[in-house]
Image 1 (cartoon, rainbow, N blue to C red):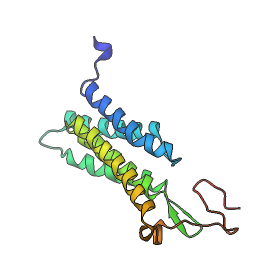
Image 2 (cartoon, rainbow, N blue to C red):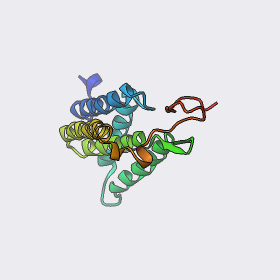
Image 3 (cartoon, rainbow, N blue to C red):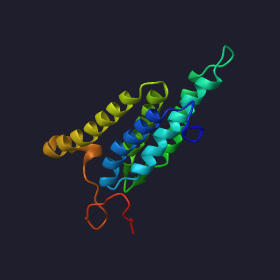
Length: 164
């Protein structure tokens, strides 16, 4: 049926983008971070569409790899939007990194490796959760950028909390 045809995209690729976005986005959403399942899925699907469409316009006069570079640049700006400085601490860098990884997963899926993208999403969540567990378990890993930031009235400050 023509209505359900998504050529040059594939339903498998779209499904894998959606799953990858849900996997990473759920972890971010459960932690109350600036991006969740919707945003993550849309970043991954959007990147997939750009990369998959380059195969349709590529010929001996074009270089499809330039699209990958442009996607990376654009995603960098999107990631920069979630990084904030509060009370002398920079927050949102991990979410920005997750956005970058989601775009990379979209590239992988767009290049024809849909289930590898899902595996990379699982690996990303394993890193996000696993490193957090290790950092909380060992006190010496809670120094520097990983120490708790306190507000002026000595209450722990959390992202999204107004400073005054």
